Image 1 (tube, rainbow, N blue to C red):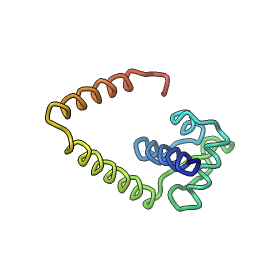
Image 2 (image 1 turned 90 degrees about the horizontal axis):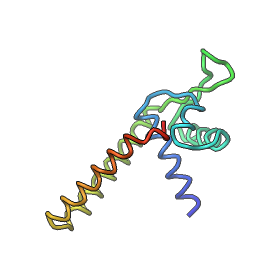
Image 3 (image 1 turned 135 degrees about the vertical axis):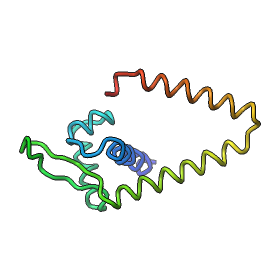
Amino acid sequence: MERNSKMNSQCNLLAELERSGTLAMTELGRRVGREKSWVSRSVDALATRGLVVKEPNPADSRKWLVTLTDEGFQSVNHWNAALDDHAVQLLACMSERDRAAVEKSLLLLLTALREDQSVY
């Protein structure tokens, strides 16, 4: 269970980097709601796997920048495609009415998340 939780959290880091581009580690941590030490360990683990590159920030030598590698982009794209396929399979098992209800609920949730300023 712990391993899956760690992998899910690292996927969140990769997804945020894919969405936002290169980020300072402190900003990355803020965006995913994690503390500095956790982000540092996770980024190091992802760098070891070749999914991100960690480089000194030329604007502030005390800070680090994190960027997805090509392999990191491929991994995020693969996971997104797998999640999309899974969603299609799940929705195919539902009636048209239930799919419409799910879509409406997801749109409401998306609106709420976009309006939630506590994340950014």
